[in-house]
Every structure is written in structure tokens, then in C-alpha cells.
Length: 173
Image 1 (tube, rainbow, N blue to C red):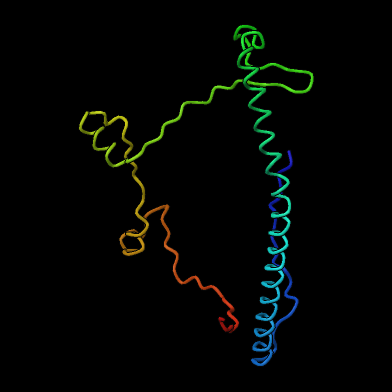
Image 2: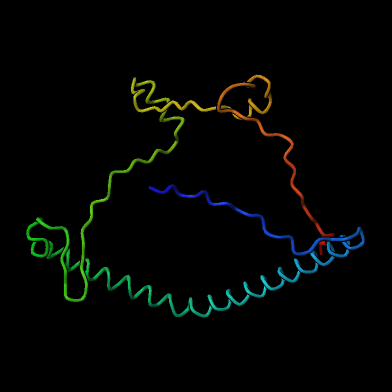
């Protein structure tokens, strides 16, 4: 059986490189201009999207209300005829010629409001089996004291990573 060859990722060829300090400065100015053009196009696009959304929202809203009314009417009829449609509860759906209706039981869910008070109450009542204790590595402590974990398998502290950032000068209005 042939083994899959490892996919090699090649860096893209450099198309253009600044040749001098003046060339780099001029290009940074062009980067700023191009960024502002992109921002203007983005703003224009968002203005057009807002106008289109506003135009169609007036058309969509009444249709959404009509949908709710029709769905409610079908649900009311189906609920009142549920025994017939579900063969006395043996099935959970019914297919009409134009579509189907289904009754689906949602899985149980649990919500907790005021978690601290709930935890205190569970502890007081001796129901600690409902409290989860989570052990996790304290990365902040490791970053504060990297020498303490030197040589521990599975932990590596990466330092000295440098990003290159270009920020053209711009005036805020």
C-alpha cells in the first residue's frame, strides 16, 4: 500500500521589494492611500447594503407576519387532530401532499442563574457531585516564572517572536 506523500507548502515568490529607504517610504505612503481607498469602497458598499436592506425590510416584514399566522393556524389544526395524524401517538410526523409536520421532543437542558449562590447551596446540602472541579495549567504563572518549568515535557515557553507592522501616518478628523 502506497503511503501518502507529505504536502509541502511553499512560500509565495516575492513580487516586489523596496530598493532604498526612499522607495520604502514612498511605498508606505502608497499603502496608506490604498488602505484609505479600500476603506472608502467598504463604506460605500455598506451604504448600499443598508439601502438595499431598508428597501427589502419593508417588503419582508409583512410576509414574515403572514408566515407566523399561517404556521400558527396549521399548528393549531394539527394539534387538535394530533391523535389522527400520529396514529394515536405511534408516529411523530405526518406527511401531507405538500409537506410534512413533525413533533420533536427537545433534549433536556439545564440553565443556572446566580452560579455562585447555587454552588454555595449545593455545598451546604451536601450535593457536591453536582459541582465540577476543573484542573488546568496556569499559563500566566508559567509565563511569570518560565525557569520553574524548564525541562517539563509538554510545556514550551516561546519568547522573542517578532511581528512586522506597517502603519501609515493618518490624520484623524
